Image (spheres, rainbow, N blue to C red):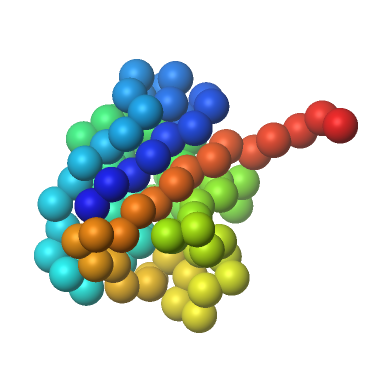
Length: 92
């Protein structure tokens, strides 16, 4: 599956796209863990000390905001899914 990074997340990882192989049915949270394992610099931006995803991390699963999906970060994934990660945006 593909993970696209934007803005400061892209800068932290040093890449704009991450390819990860997960079994079908793995969750969005498991994709986060796999991405952080592959690019440890993302850990501080995405996870707190307890391993929970920061509230300011915005993720889209195939264009749908993960926060609005029924299982949120526990949504199951398919190999052809795409995740887009955006940092918080401020300003006007």
